[in-house]
Length: 156
Image (cartoon, rainbow, N blue to C red; front, top):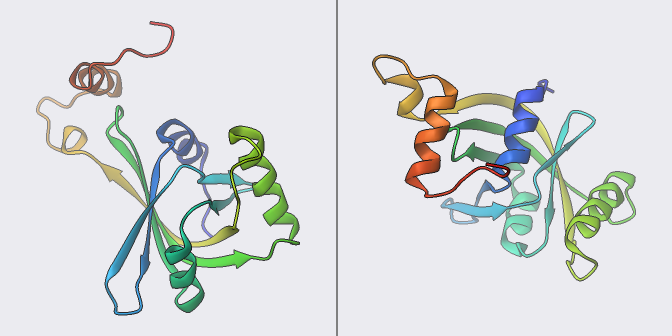
């Protein structure tokens, strides 16, 4: 398994929303938003709260890709790997289910927990990081997108 860095973990926490891609039975892609992507002990997990198609796809074909991008930093990561749908009596399932319920409330169902065996991680960078001349620093990029989205950082 590939190491998940502190920066990757920070992006996941800051972005909140990630997108999980699986393969439908007919070979077409299925993209499902997740606000439950988390890292525990260097491993990626997400909870299935309302995604039965994602789970059906993963049980048939465990290939998965997860994209997470911080919209203000204009950067993120692509995690590729194989998924394992955990059983409800599994300690890792219980750990993630308890986290989801403590964060969102007991009314949130955790139908499944998915553990990802990461086989590749690649950075996702906006053209603002790649092509801007002269190069822009992260603070400048972040402030530009705060303005574009008409938001202010907490505490500002």
